[in-house]
Image (cartoon, rainbow, N blue to C red; front, side):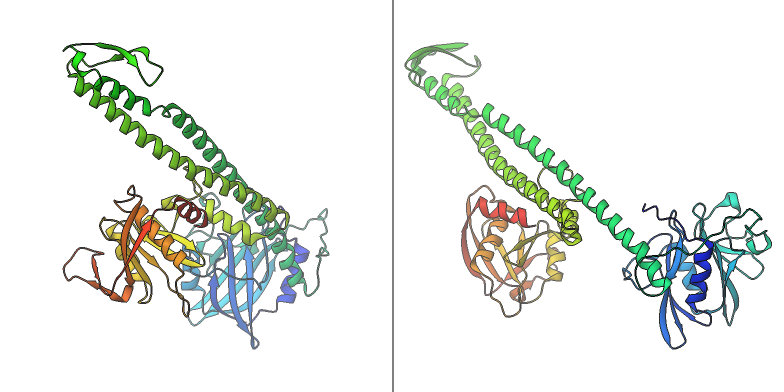
Length: 481
C-alpha cells in the first residue's frame, strides 16, 4: 500500500468540474485490477478515459492516460457493467452531499441506471442501482450494510457530512504540470510505480537468496556423499583379493585372512557370505564396486551442474542488486519470471519452463530450442512448429523430439545444432551413453502416419549427425533458460 490517502471533497468537486463528461457515450469498461475500473468515453468529438479506484486506502477518480493490460478474464462485476451500462450515455455527474460519493446517471433506450462511487478510506464501493435506489449489483458485496443485489442504496436522502464544526478541505498542490486530472493521475501512478518496483525488487531478492541457500545446501550434501563414496575402488580390490585365494577358501568360511598386496602386503580379513562360494563372494564385491562407481560418477556430474547453477544464481543476485539501484524494472521482471515459484535446487528445473504440457524451452545464440519429453508434448510442439523449423531425434534410442525455431534469412549455426543435439541425447534413453547418432530435417519433411499414436512421425530428407555429450554446453543452456 502506498498510503497516499483518498481524495478529499474539495478535490472531488474540482475534478468533476474539469472532467466535463456529461453527454459522453460509454463505449467500453475495463478492469486494470480488482477494485479499479476504466470507462472508455466518447463525447464532444473526442475519446477519453475515466479511471475510478474503490480499493483502499487510495480511493480516487480522474481521467486516465495509462496502458491497460488486455486479455484478462473480466471479473463478475465488470461482466455485469458491460451487460447493463456499456452503451449508455452519461446525463449527470454529481458529488453527493460533499461526502466523497459520486453519482453518475446514465441512460439508454431501456431506461436509466445510476452508478454510485463511494471513495471512502474504509468501506469504499461501486454500487449500481435503478432510479428508485434498488441495488442491481455491487463491486464489494456487503450483506451487513445491505449492499447486495435486491438491497437499497439512496445516500442522497441522508444528512450532509458538513456540520458547524466541519473541517474545511482545500485542493492539494499536486506536483507536475497540466490539468488537475493529469497531476492527480501522475501523483498516484508515480507513487505506485515506485511502490511496485520496491516490492518487485524485494520479491526477486527473496526468491534469489532462497534459491542460493537451497543450492548451497545441495552442493554441500553432494560433496559429503562424494567423499563417502570416493573409496569405491576398494570393493574391486577386495574382489581381486578373494579371487586370488579361491583354492584356499573352504566352504562356509566367514572371514578370509590374506595378505593385502594393494597395501604393502598387510594382513587383512575380508568378510564373506557363508552361503556363497568364494567366486560368488568376489562377484558381490565387484558389483558393489560398479554400483558405487556409478553413484560417484553421477554425484560428480550433479555437483558440477549444481555448482554451475549456484554460480548463475549468485551472478543474478549481483544483477538484481544493480537493477534495484538503477531502478531497472525490465531486468527485475526478467529475473522475477525466471525464479518465481522455484522450490527445488537449481535455477532452472524442467517444470519451470514453458509448462510441463508444452515441453522445455532453451535459448542458444538467439535461437529458441524446444524439447518435447513425451508423446503429448511432442504432439503439442509439432502443431506450433513452422515448415522451416528444424527437428532432431536420436537414431538408436527412444527419446525427445527437439526443435530449433528458424529465423528468416539466417542459417542455423553449428553450435546451435550441437546444443540441440546435446539436449536430444540428454532427454533420451541414451543419456548415459556419452555420445549418439542423430538425424535431423526440416519440420515440413516429417510425415505423419495415419492412425498412429500422437506425435509419431517419419522423417524424410534427413541428415545424420554424431554428437558427443558436452556437459559444459548443457550447463550453459540451463543458465540461459
